[in-house]
Length: 123
Image 1 (cartoon, rainbow, N blue to C red):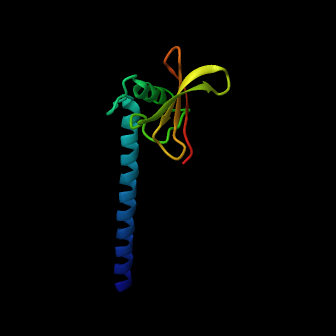
Image 2: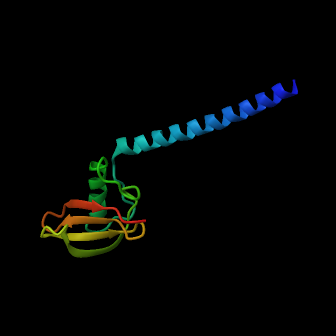
């Protein structure tokens, strides 16, 4: 009888732990799904040129192929400089964002002011 009680207690404990894990995983996917379905960019500290909004929209539109290091609407700008896009001669504005070791980069076409590329930095 003592062994049966111990087995039942362990089984109940395992069941509770598994149930909590399932709820956490389900909650994560529900929240993640609502973010992806919503797709709205809400920039808390917008810049005067609107670059953060454009970067957020670009990341939302390309979420199947571009993997940023943080949520698209959570970035801040560290610096803005002139550059060349991938050695192709296209003059761009390079936006260095506030995430991670080397910083995530967004490239904005100087003429159209549209985001043409994004590069996640190294951790």
